[in-house]
Image 1 (cartoon, rainbow, N blue to C red):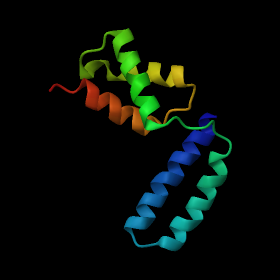
Image 2 (spheres, rainbow, N blue to C red; image 1 turned 90 degrees about the horizontal axis):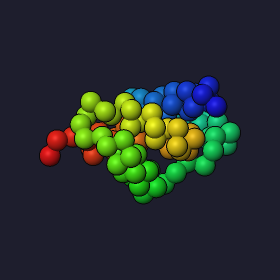
Image 3 (cartoon, helix red, strand yellow; image 1 turned 120 degrees about the horizontal axis):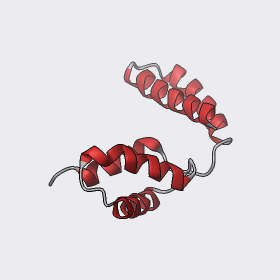
Length: 100
């Protein structure tokens, strides 16, 4: 599972770079590979579900500062069993733990 996730992340980054560089032909090839790899991963959670899970974990851990971001992300990963996109989780946790 970890290997497939790493390969998916690599494809996503490659697609982004190829599109910035104007290489749509290479981006399309990466997108095809990405779609194949994603069939081996569990169904990803919707953003709303991830936000709810992050809120629940923050409350359970009584996290109140950005210093606890790693612990929150780790727990969200454990509870979601790989069904939450790590980039999205990181973004949501960071937004919630940033001082107002």
